[in-house]
Image (cartoon, rainbow, N blue to C red):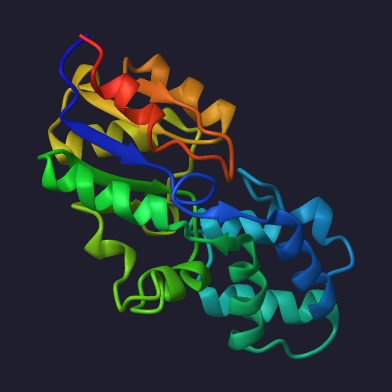
Length: 210
């Protein structure tokens, strides 16, 4: 095993604790009757998937959602729905990200996400201390900007090429089994935390392997 120098993090389910049921409830409040079918913990479908894939803009999503529910849905309501996924940002995660960077690891975010979620994640409100996620990362690769989504291996290849890093020197953390399998198929070392559980000690088991 090569010495790990780069760590790629998923956002929801790893850095953030996810609550998919809260997102479903919020979209049901907005009027999406089949929200549970449209929303998934790992990969969204239909209109919701098109937004995360970068196939439509935030405004196009808002207009289509308005048509779907039969009334004008506001940008704020869309953000309220999507941000329902985020349950909390544990203090331990903030601490470990700072610690890993101080130890010389290059930290990269690789996320299936969308403009509405990133309005909060990229804002000073993200960590409650005035810092957006970008302050914790050396680089961010977002599905809707690159028009690529996990578990497509092309998404992982894009990051490896852009970062000019070797899979053997890279560790990837994601709570999604298919995403972990895709990364592993390229020779990337992987770790699959469980949403909401503490992975901050376990990560050193991987980093300290020789």
